[in-house]
Length: 183
Image (cartoon, rainbow, N blue to C red; front, side):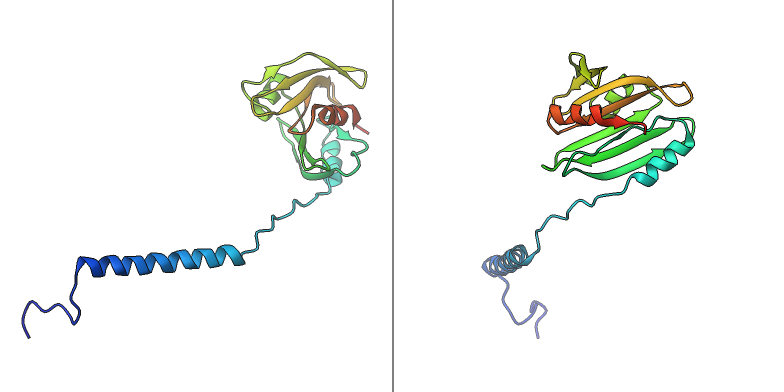
């Protein structure tokens, strides 16, 4: 056996290209098979019961903890949280019957701070609107979000703000703002 024999097969550039082509075809066939047999159904967004969060937040006594009363027909709550401490914050995320988003954000921050955090730092302030007999300020951003917000006094007299923001129609955001109650 000579030193130059590297195996039984002769190695040529054409053989290398052929082997790579076969490998690529196998990978493409596998990817096509997986694409056709994969379950591409989206995972549905689960509704949450926000009553426990409301109860805990109201027991804390630091925020008014405003909630829509009643929740519009066909809508569902998909997220809720209450953070206590020196910077209490309430969040309620809702989906409309058309799966557009509306969120209620409440904290001991200015309305401008809530807008910067939940709408956009460069949100455009619009005209003031009357909702439920109260004056609310409106905002929009380049991404299509619409928000209304106002300042109020919390249960202990401390200033706080509420912001209702979403990708839903402006009328739907204002509908939620009009239905907010401290119960």
